[in-house]
Image 1 (cartoon, each protein chain N blue to C red):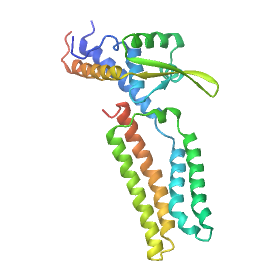
Image 2 (cartoon, each protein chain N blue to C red):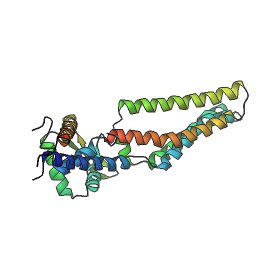
Image 3 (cartoon, each protein chain N blue to C red):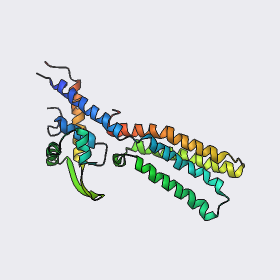
Image 4 (cartoon, each protein chain N blue to C red):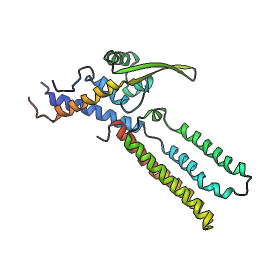
Length: 98
Length: 151
């Protein structure tokens, strides 16, 4: 296994979640759901897996009378995501083995 | 069977596409830069307000600038406020602020010392133009850098 390769982050939905969260301090759950064109339950499941690994944190906040969930990459999550991208880069550069 | 490198490339392609979409989403709309330019343009125009009482001369432009800033802030997507700015992005922002200060200051000095009545007007036009032209360029660079779309 390549160094930095993280099986927790590797599934495409989780990779995309990390790519969306990486440039921002936090993002609203509903915005993530819409951007990923997925359902609440599917997103919750993926976020749960990332949260179990300590890669994302969630907080609930009330704004304009509505309760919203905000999601953020933890420092460990950000490091793991970037290391995983480097590992993918490394893998992608290797010659194909059929 | 799919190779490791092919699957890695497919994963990277998915990430790049997500980063590209994210970079577009996090960009401020053109209207934001128009309002931002208007806000900057009010600064040198203060020089023309000498006929007003001193209190109004300084509070009126501030009230106008704050009002425009509030409108501008409503035109930007909520997510924009959450962008993580890199050191390079902060340096670009500081550089832009310095240029704005130089233009505004020069317009004031030329008006006061040389009597060039048109200097504040020219300064306002320059500031508005730089916000409308340079602002979106900076914004594009910031979002591409933050999202990783530039990599």
